[in-house]
Length: 74
Image 1 (cartoon, rainbow, N blue to C red):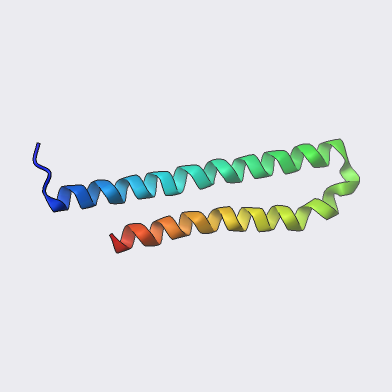
Image 2 (image 1 turned 180 degrees about the horizontal axis):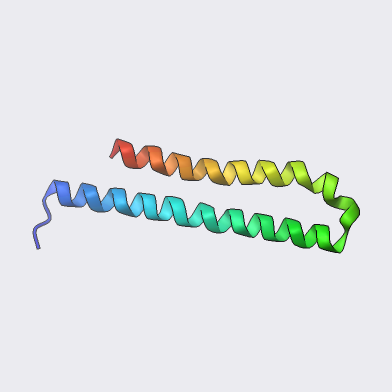
């Protein structure tokens, strides 16, 4: 197996995109799931949960965008 710099760079890009896409996707699913669970338990809290949920989703999505930028820079 030849580990020249191009192979290592390609593997690093692939790993960065894989982890940078999978983990934020998992986090987004978990955030939405817990928010829907909380709203299901207390429907009156929907207005109070909406903005913090959207902020958390945006921050999780930002991590995926950072991973994409890093993959392009590698």
